[in-house]
Image (cartoon, rainbow, N blue to C red; front, side):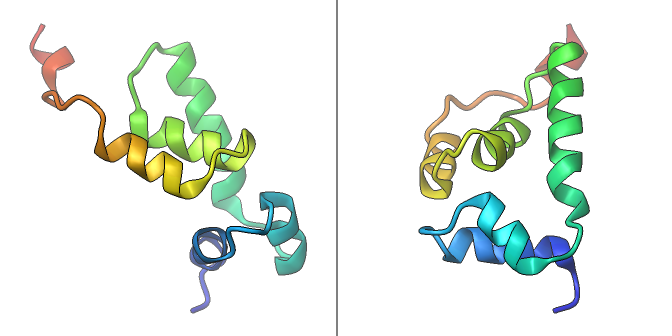
Length: 88
């Protein structure tokens, strides 16, 4: 697989004992999605948007949240309409 973002994501999911910085160092290439996730998360915070998937990605990448914990958090969060804000 040639996608650096995909390679990074697979390594992150499979190599639970490696840190994000270790995976990035081992890859030795720019992973655009890594910095883009931070920019998108910070923008969502500035705009006061509820972006649970983006928030979990940010926490995994930048706050060392375990991937399994982030997935469990998303699966167990309160369900609501994704477009509730638009109709208000």
